[in-house]
Each structure stands twice: as structure tokens, then as C-alpha cells.
Image 1: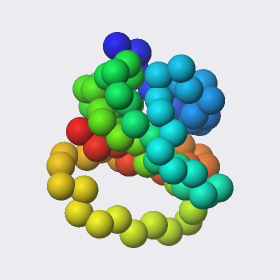
Image 2: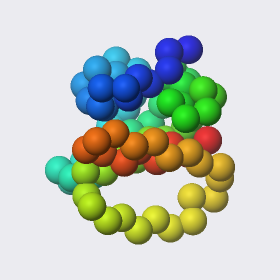
Image 3: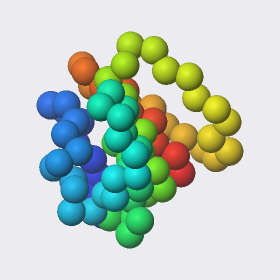
Amino acid sequence: MEQLDISEGFDMHDYRHGLKLLTDDRETRQLANPDDEFACPACGKSFEKLFVSEKRTNSFGNPGTAFCLARTDEKLLLLTH
């Protein structure tokens, strides 16, 4: 399982072969990791969904599961497990 590398930022196109785009509204994207192809950059475990935001502020409902946060200079990544 390949770990998402965010050391130089995050570009979803680098991982499009294994992530499935669920929603995209320009500043936020939600992706699924349907085949557990990638590991979380925070904990190293497989994740179910990835929320990527370029917004300065975000509100989240109850994800109903464990989650990790990762940050690049430009994006916030929320990964649910």
C-alpha cells in the first residue's frame, strides 16, 4: 500500500489511478479510496474517504468514525478510517 506523500503539497491527479472522485466544488473535493490502494499520511493506515479543502475555514459534521488531519501549505486533508 502506497502512502500519500504530502511533503511537497498534494495533487489529487498524482493519485487518480486509485482514488475515486465523489464531489468537487472547486475549493473542496471528496475522494474515496475504494481498493485500499493508499495509506494515510498521518497514521500510515488505509483510509476510506479523503476530504481536501483549499478554503481558509471549514465546518465538519460528525464523521462517525476515526479520522486524521494532514496539512500542506495550501490544503487541509481530512481522512476518515
